[in-house]
Length: 256
Image (cartoon, rainbow, N blue to C red; front, side, top):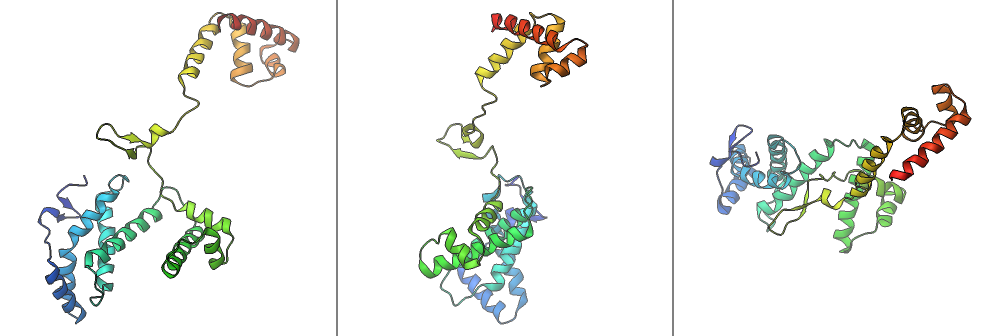
């Protein structure tokens, strides 16, 4: 659906594209107070939003929702763009659109994070960006925690909490053939061929027991009951349960 023609009622195949000279002219008009130029700038940069949301196509979110959120980022970029800076508008706008979409995804994440944790995480990210800008070096978590005056563990926990979940079907490598997904790299110790064969073997061996022995083995080893509990349930002594259990296990060993 990411390539569908109409998004939020907008025919994306007919979106206009503004040249750089026209963009500068419109920004000059906007900054002189002509609000009609703002609408033209928005319409002329919707393709930019469309290209950005392609990056988030595997998140399972509705394209229309991402497009609307991306448009908010675009409008913020238009309202804050400074013509005096020697930078293309797209270079300035793309990070703002991406940031707006990421905030939306974090706030609407299925994994709920408390407001206080999110606040610490966002403040930590702001401090990190400032320290990188001032020192041209990546700060340590301890330095960020010291700047925020909070324990280091809280910063680590907060930053971990706002990380976006990764889909098990996220491709992590593709050499032109079938991609390797995250789930391909995760082992499941409870679902190995050895355990599967062992389960079949046990089921076949259980068929060799009589009904009372099957019942005792099932209660003891599949339902986790004690010999005393089994004795009370089937109406015999604990000594009898012990004797029948030993006989059943000896019989099972012959077939396993």
